Picture 1 (cartoon, one colour):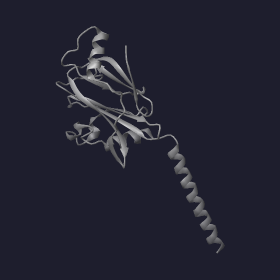
Picture 2: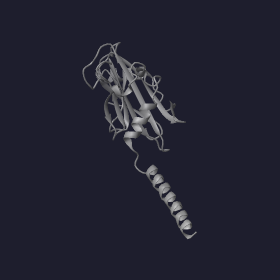
Picture 3: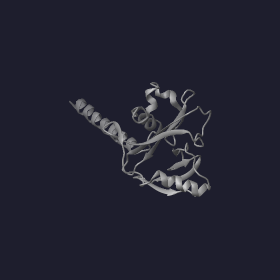
Picture 4: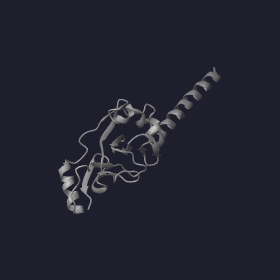
Length: 201
């Protein structure tokens, strides 16, 4: 009977230690590699249309900067590129931002932002019930014509009709840069809840 009581106490103690350790790990430093990889696995072709073409999604990861929670997406066949970045939210969750650009011709190397004939989009996502859903109302009310106008004022030249707005996601920064014909015109700085915008002179 005494041995049974001792065994029961040991089991309770072991369970307590395991629970405490798990909670501490959850509160501690997150595993950046797991964070980025898990979100990348949850992306659908709605978030990243190129996934319809490449069923082996790992084949389009050109660079993985896990420390900064960033992926550069490109390969030898794709006439374009994309990026994914993970931002920390003040509520403890994450904002996942994904871009994809498709070009009229293949460009040999990164960076691609000086290219003008590539069209694409940007998606803001957050995790709900183990799925990524669109995150809304995160950016300032900004019109494309305002950015084109600022570009022409800044560079003293007219934007070409083929020039498209591009979003450069950060690695070590906290801001997304909006570029036009390779020129940075606007910055979206993440404050943990939303993006604060400012023109870049």
